[in-house]
Length: 251
Image (cartoon, rainbow, N blue to C red; front, side, top):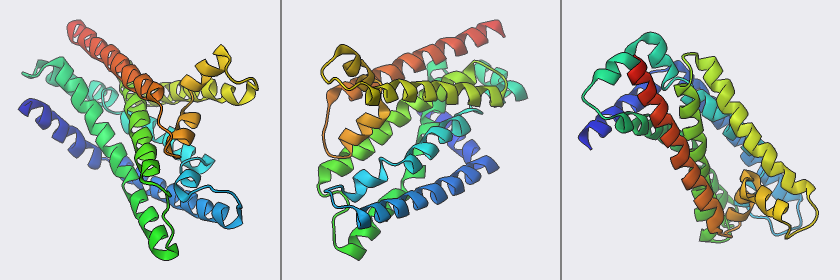
């Protein structure tokens, strides 16, 4: 466990020594700030029962940075080390392969969680200024941030897998972005299937991050998305582990 935390600290430290990390953080703050403003405007002009949390987590300004951030924060984890020749040194270190893979995954996920931390201040400020609870119920907060974490686990794992497949960071970023985009396109099919209760509608819902966030941000909990994200994360990390082992044997 001590070796894992050493590797984890190395990944976090390495991330914050990259200028790209601060570019990503600034971009994220700007876009999420604009998203918060858009949510406030929606509430001012709306007549429904939509809460601030629902408005914030279900706009295009929320999904754009969410999709873009994972290729940027994961493309370097294996590809950069392989290109610089430090991956071979890591392979010969007295650490297990799964510790290396999981430490890199956890380091990227930690950075992703930090990106979303300021959003809590948005909702706190909204409640302080308006006197209205941004979520309406504690379940909405729990659901929205739980779904953020679940999606973050799967998409980070996909990015780590893409980075392990190549020595080129740009290629890794494109592969990661394409894989996440495919998942969104499959989920979007759910909006074009009018009949409810059909098998195809159920399948597309199972893969739809948009519908998952819509439900969870309303405090509606469903175990199917939880099982999907956690099991898919484990499968992708398992594949990354075997690719890393293959590269060790090949070296």
